[in-house]
Image 1 (cartoon, helix red, strand yellow):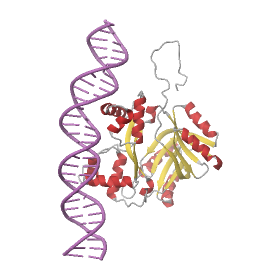
Image 2: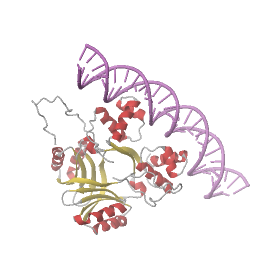
Image 3: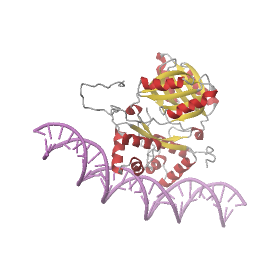
Image 4: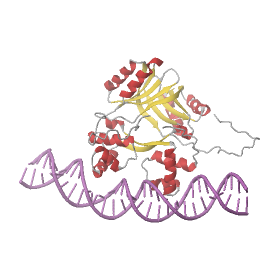
Length: 174
Length: 174
DNA sequence: GGTCTCACCGCAGAATCTGCGGCATCCTGC
DNA sequence: GCAGGATGCCGCAGATTCTGCGGTGAGACC
């Protein structure tokens, strides 16, 4: 029943709602309703519609990797022959520390992001990958930007009714 | 306003709780409590502690980029001279479609992830970047894996403060 | 004009969150 | 062994929030 996933013509109110739950995934309906200047029922109706149409995929808590012991992060580019794709899949399956893997055009076939507790931990994973294809590993100094998907159209200066000005600073600065 | 966050000795219950809110950021306390087999109050106490200590950073709704019109995604590697870092910062600041930017070791200085509504949209951003440094752009075929931070599963060695000078483990203290 | 659809609003009961006090366990020092 | 203190857990009751339902007004269409 995943009918017509896209094809949803969101208006400005929908976009404001999406922005609100992107900024605070636990915001209460009353708070969201106040943000988008709508009643609670209308807010809920729109939110549920966005969820059911797959525009809002899910809600997740984000954790601080360092607090879990992952003090290292690396970008690995990997080139692999087509016949070994399922070998890659197997590694991805058993290594949850590969938190992200994109299949891309260009020189590399895959670009991955890996978290590790230390150098030896990282090397364990990279050498596993190196058995399947040729890899290039770069360590991450710093996550400069990590943003939610931007809203097209008029993402800035949406509501202006009460003129309260600064509501909640430091929402998405990272 | 940040940190001194780490050094949080989470136990298995904390880890289960983190896993639960990572999987469903809107789960109710009662549901979480049932998952980790604890009372609602204890669950809330632990959750709040994790939040206040920065282990759980925030909650976010995740949207489907295609539903917002972003049908294209690209990985851009960028090499730039140190004197132009603030130029990069300026671009990052005014281009919300650069959803991720990592500063890394190796040949490139930055690795970015960009969403775009089409080729011309992508080219607008990449040519802006190309004015500041030399870039390599790869298109993303598919997001193979996109996982939350894994939980350090097996509780290896628990800190033991007996402190006899006889033994000294520290084989993996990085 | 009549009617249909759509999006909005508000209500009342159910569910959930919050702050508080009480209890059991584990240390620590005497 | 035994006070004193610190933790972590539990459950309660009031406040808040969510949910399903019916009602209303503005277009669209005939």
